[in-house]
Image (cartoon, rainbow, N blue to C red; front, side, top):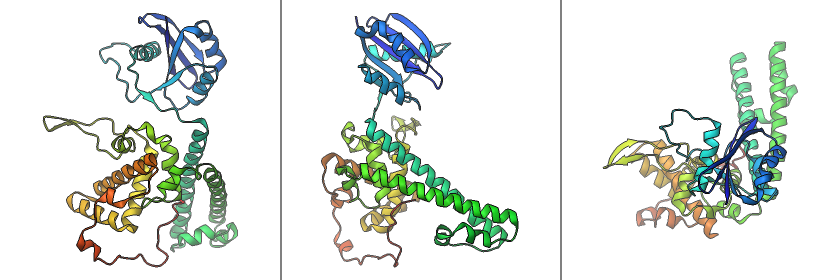
Length: 363
């Protein structure tokens, strides 16, 4: 008789619950977060274990990889989609582990995606790059604020990025301000170097994929946004259609209706926050530099407001991204926005000012 295993994973321990096909609870035990200890617990039942379900927490990599390396069939449980029975008066780690095993037994467990290990490592590297960019931006804003507060003058961003610690120190007279300015510029330069190294490694791996090359054809998507979308998406065929992908990118409205009346909202955070950020950023660039995107955005803004119009354009771009990646086909603006009207064909394109073209999206 086959056995299902549910593991409620925490930062310092894991609660394992074993259940057979008839729903009988065989064993539960709390073990430390150590692969050897978990394998020893499962070893007597190895031949009968069909599937192991692990709650998708922040630290699942080591456990999933280790169990897969030892031949176990492992799935990730999506905690946002699981709905435990709310009538229970008392729940704990034991009930949570058995609940995962029970859903496995009934084949009702909502599963999270397990990305490829090599792609996952590069994807995480890109996420850390975003963290470094945000920290560098904080330093730049702090330095500019120091100049405005102390000297009453604004320093252009391009000047800040090219400034040396000695030049920054020479701007001030107070020793404390000199030390602060010098250290901020030094840290900023270190982070700039680190960001460049991460980008080179990521491009060397992910820049060769067809998905990344196709994404470059979409309006508003440059180097960094293309890498983010390609790596965060992974295998695009895991999404049944463009609508499901747009929902995963948080570009679809969260709403619960009954009899045409709003009854509430569902989980607005269900999906990938990095893809949500990437497509909103792409929408901002697209409406500035692409004529058809700008027309769509302006029409939506007149009907609603700028926030919803931006989100609607992001949804359009997300669906277009699914098609170019899933079909390995070139971007076709007509499929996205429809054919151009005769009145639009006669319009002269509004060219951006010299030097104000689409940025490389390094930041």
